[in-house]
Length: 116
Image (tube, rainbow, N blue to C red; front, side, top):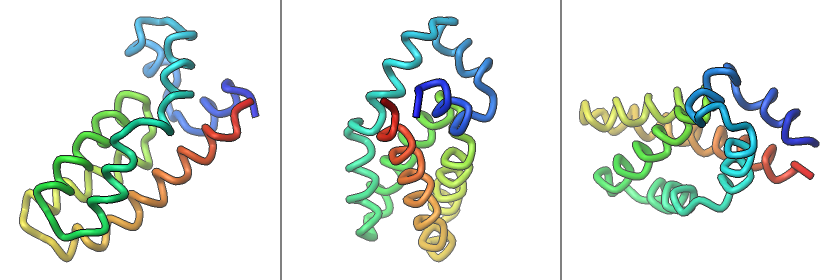
């Protein structure tokens, strides 16, 4: 898969994402390729195995921002749901949303890992 194909698959509004990267396509592509190695990903996977809600909130909130900047809408929405639930102390809602965060995160990482 090319990086262009990955962008089309993962980013709902690529023109808006490119604007957030100062219109620099190479800059965007460089960061996309590095995304699967981001320390936040392992932090999210690790904290979501616990019930340390403060840590989960911090990690998922960070991932929410990153996914929003890239335009990974399904991941952003899943993270938003968990963040909102934790802030409302709706831990059952957060628990039910965490699998979707992890699934969407895996989808993004898998797609980016297939870029040649």
